[in-house]
Image (cartoon, rainbow, N blue to C red; front, side, top):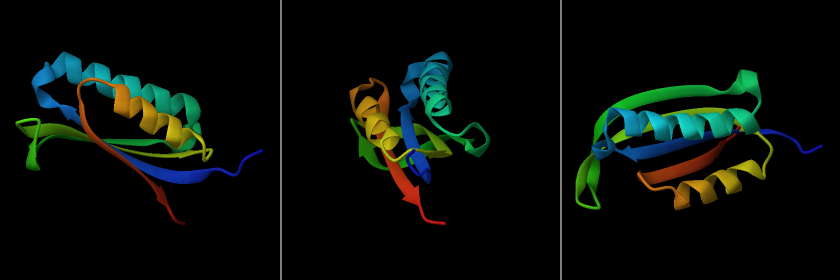
Length: 99
């Protein structure tokens, strides 16, 4: 069995999607992470709409979500792949947290 590690994932959703669109994207990814991570280790922190440091696709605001989770080392690669092919996502970053 693979050794699990702690990860932090920050993703920014396009705020022009509206409340329902944002909730759909956030639910999609939190559900995906919950299905592949240790259940008691998952922590979701929705920061809400924030101003971007620089415009992305002519947008100046985005909806920020930070998720901390523990999973096998191969899952973050798959999660990153899904982030890259999902419409409505402006940016994403997955980092491993050292204990």
